[in-house]
Image 1 (cartoon, rainbow, N blue to C red):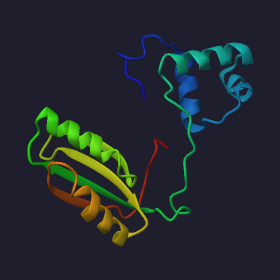
Image 2: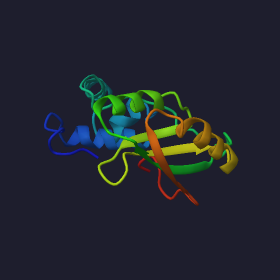
Image 3: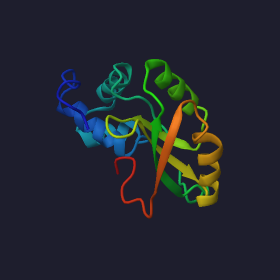
Image 4: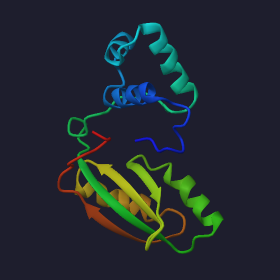
Length: 156
C-alpha cells in the first residue's frame, strides 16, 4: 500500500489508520480512535494531517455496478500511431471526456495505454469502442479483453 520512499513522514499508527480507512472511509473518528487505541482528538489531528499531506486523496462512495446496470467490464489495449509528447497529451486530454472509461494507464510495453471500460453490456461496449475510443486522437489500433468475473477490485 505504501512504499518506503513516500511514507518516511508517517509512523505505524498512521499506517494502521490508512489501512482502516481504506476498508471503511466512513468510519467515525471515535470508532477509528478506538480501533487505534487512542482518544478522539489526537486521532482527528492525525487524520487531518494525513489529508493535508496528501496521503489521503479523498473519500468516495463505492458504487454497485450491478445495481447501476453497468456490470460489463472490458480492458482495452490502445496503440497510438506515434508517441510524441504532443500526441500523448492530445490522447490524455481526449480520454477524459469518455465517461465509460473508468481507468486509463500509460503502459511501457507493446501497446501505449490500458483502459478499464465499464458499460451495461457488450453492445454498449461495442458502441463506446467504435464511436468514442477508436476515434480518439492518434489511435492506431485497439485490442479488447472482456472480463468474465471480477475476483478483486478496489483493493478489497
